[in-house]
Image (cartoon, rainbow, N blue to C red; front, side, top):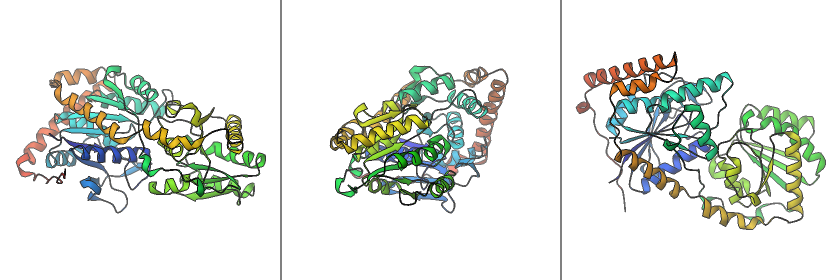
Length: 431
């Protein structure tokens, strides 16, 4: 029998990105497996209310205030009335939150547990332990994951990071990597200009994605290799700095800034190059390098986070996250392409056998089934004890939040009884 699943995250289409792609593809595959899936996110500009995407995937764009990089302002309790209404309307069995920086995700897991629903969390990022921002996020994560039934990480490095940050039992954390639709990233050798070696960069232009490194790397590579040019797709605060770098070094004919592109345009950009450069400073997985390899590009990337787990070594040239190391590794890749010492024609078929979204959905489905088959009964006192252990000060605050959340649920049940909420009709499943 199919499950009713709610994916909750601040980050979803129309914003492009790896988390957004993951949520969409897993949802589509779960629908193909006979489940009903809805997505809850915040409103994007004029996109608010309820939208239905392909295959009957329903998206609730909730009007909440965005404070930073599409993350909503944490309201703790004001999301509960809307959330409860959606859960009842859609008869949800499993609440699946995504992203440590998503306020809606954290709140959905807390409220979902209060309502007695199964809860799952997927972590897509890596965070440190020393700076103020990481300490705050980690404490919030510890609060949220005290209520969660199971945690999914997209790489083994991400799993270790999440276990340490939230003080979790490693047995409660599974690794399910991202994937690609290999049919959408088929190589086209005729698309690349043979008179140049084109290096492709497709990423958000933020500091954590290595945009500052690009400012130093690109002029040096261009001065060392006269037959090399760059195509950069993406947008962000560092885009202005890249434009200034191009003008300063007079690289208008060597470096092309394309700007933000849709995901369906990524393949057409990839196949025009021979090398993909990914100078990230931190990354839990890196779906874009899998897409690049599937398009037949040799990948130059930094050896950080979960990146070394993603691709076989013959598809990549690794570097340390420093200017000199990246220059050396990029030059090594350029020589490999010039001398034809790497056979990139086999990359697509290899990637196709390694990564598949249907496999990701099947493994996620197994986690849902195991949770629902287990004994999840818990008294309020037992729940409060778990939160109380989160810290001498934070623990008391978390317990207070739980008590208020439970009281709010009873108030909502009295003000807006379940019988007064209309149930949504399910999209017909055609077999």
